[in-house]
Image (cartoon, rainbow, N blue to C red; front, side):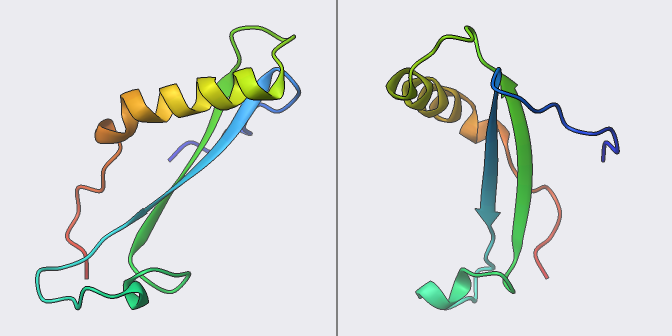
Length: 80
């Protein structure tokens, strides 16, 4: 894991992705989700294409980024 400070400022978009995991024998209920459950946090700072983007444009950019890349973000270890 990188220990470098993450870039910050108005030219960056901060995304925090939370991935929850479950095992085959887990109950299908909302109890599987929460702070104390199996999860991976991915903290991203994306440089925006332009510094003068308005909030609706930033929202579209974030949705497109996540939509195109969510399948690449995965936990490869066994959930305990």
